[in-house]
Image (cartoon, rainbow, N blue to C red; front, side):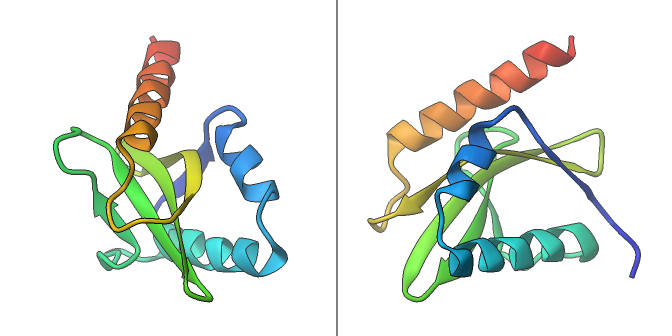
Length: 113
């Protein structure tokens, strides 16, 4: 299978989230990341655009009744830049998490200049 998108992690935000998870959750996250890397079309159940935030997306992971979100964006056509993640505990994504993701995304693009 050929890689469609290279996955890049920005700083340590995502890693801190990832290592704090159980083995089962990390395995499920890895499966979804592989899907993002190798699938031409990613089903909305796994990747969704954040409304009202240009360029920001969330990778959606469900494991044993729990919901996890990992923020990311596309860069240069085929990169998925992973930012931070969180364990979702309500229907709506908390605005504080979206603000944090926007700040990290701005930080990422500022460092590219």
